[in-house]
Length: 79
Image 1: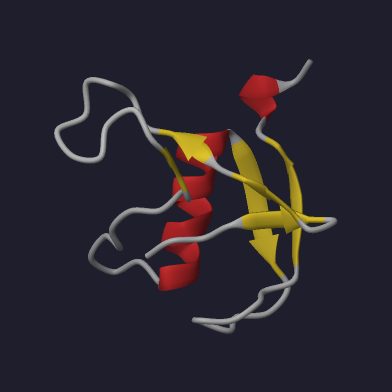
Image 2 (image 1 turned 45 degrees about the horizontal axis):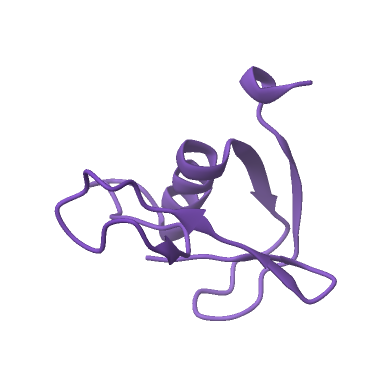
């Protein structure tokens, strides 16, 4: 599963570390695997928090399409 945060036509990518086994040192979209018992939307929200440090709450669920969301920095990343 993969997702993209898009605002005003701009996309927020993630940079994969150089020590990763695959696709290292490249810019990519955040994503990962769905854990057993987790919905795709819950998995995407978890991955966005882990990889970008943001909390995302989808206002609707439309797998494979656009999902209007509200997004805010995770508490551990407050300025």
